Amino acid sequence: MRRPILAGNWKMNLLRREVERLLDELRAAVAGVADREVLVCPPFPYLAQAAAILEASPIQVGAQDCCWELRGAFTGEVSPAMLKDVGCTRVILGHSERRQLLGETDERIHAKLRCAVKAGLNPILCVGETLEERQADRTWDVIRRQLERGLLGLEAAETAGLVIAYEPVWAIGTGQTATPAQAQHVHRRIRSWLEKRFGPGVSASTRILYGGSVNAGNVDVLMAEPDVDGGLVGGASLRAADFARIVRFEA
Ligand code: PGA
Image 1 (cartoon, rainbow, N blue to C red):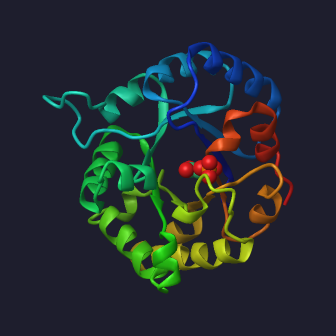
Image 2 (image 1 turned 135 degrees about the vertical axis):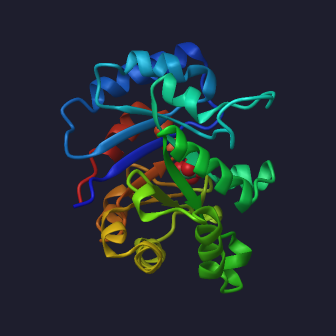
């Protein structure tokens, strides 16, 4: 079955001392958790430090983005090979903040995803609709397009480490979580799409995370939905006690 993944997206938060403290607290707070995967995604400058602190811990380290090429003249960019080299196992791609604030297109996200897969880094592909798109009844059209373009040309054999994160843009950082039924509805459609695109094996084994104002108080009901396989958590992942409670969800 699908092992749940609880992932913390730290975004552009915390300085070195705070990173150390949060990771120390987190390591202690999630000790003994074995039946779920725990991932933290600190900003680039702290990834190697995080990997060192977490070396003897089951908590994995991931990045929040990567370049679409493995090496070369790309000033300011970070290669997925480098991320892998410093100890990352996963990379978040296509987060709505990057789509909206940095103009990332589906095509660019797709190129990053291909490059991450080539480097052996498992992608977490984020998809999700804005409030206007939901109100215009375009939720599924938008998500299908993001999936089709983001995963263009990917072979079933390349999907082993793939994770999808459904993050409705209107729920990110707003405190307005999707209801469990709203999340389940979209997750179900994503799983059906995966089945048509890659076959039943990939569809049954691919983890689909929900993101958008997940917190210690709503994680249990979200995780109770059959197609919700974990959470991508922003704000609440910056507090050890809250994130530990999310990791220890009871569904
Ligand atoms: P949030 O962020 O939990 O603060 O809403 C989630 C995300 O952007 O991944």
